[in-house]
Length: 312
Ligand SMILES: C[S@@+](CC[C@H](N)C(=O)[O-])C[C@H]1O[C@@H](n2cnc3c(N)ncnc32)[C@H](O)[C@@H]1O
Image (cartoon, rainbow, N blue to C red):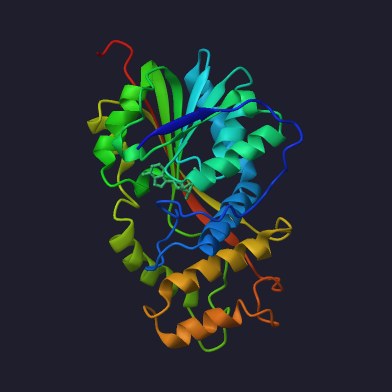
């Protein structure tokens, strides 16, 4: 089912309200092997917002590169799998004349995003479309830019989703696909005594969960974009590394991410590794929120492709 709404500004709306506790179709990130709960949703919102804050300079650089490639006027942007609105708000700022259609399968995410847009006085520039982006983008044919960050790997059929993206773009319009190599990393090799290599092992175990639950994570989006009839103009891999002095929220971010990893690996990893993860999460002296030795690492990939101007 597809539902679209448009909103007018409401300057007195609440600012960042976390945790609309409905049940989005996909929680995003990593499936936990159990039904989604309001708590999962609230955690996802918190992780997405912290990710936006901590990697803000990267996003600014990316949207600046996209503006150069877009060349001419950008008046309609589609944010595919918009989540809490990180891309929506960055692109509204980058393209001050544009409006954004925020697309998501989760009504809770769209409600949160709408509330934020209103609170920022941007409600008249944001429309929402509740749909499974894997089945197309319902009637949109005039997009100058489609932005899909950490979302396309969730769809059941990437080829169908990209056919929908192509149909939504005007000839000459561009699509940017941003993905990351799984969860970010934070820990030194010897973070927990007696469990060297803990984080690498946990990521490997998580990879097995992902392979089952989000099989298109790590897909070759360049090839898929080309197969969808789009011309890939840029392909870029950026290993991001943040060292001390870290942004203020880095410890909280590490705590949330490692907590989600622990949840996903319950019953799937060596119990000694799960215990070691608990030491990093339990509020004691080994807790990641108190450590001085965190380094935040995350590899980000970006593909930018264009719908040929002269193709049907
Ligand atoms: C990891 S979040 C990324 C959010 C945002 N793009 C960002 O970069 O912060 C993935 C988002 O995609 C949405 N999503 C998952 N599957 C979807 C689908 N089939 N169609 C539309 N949205 C989907 C989820 O609800 C979630 O909001």
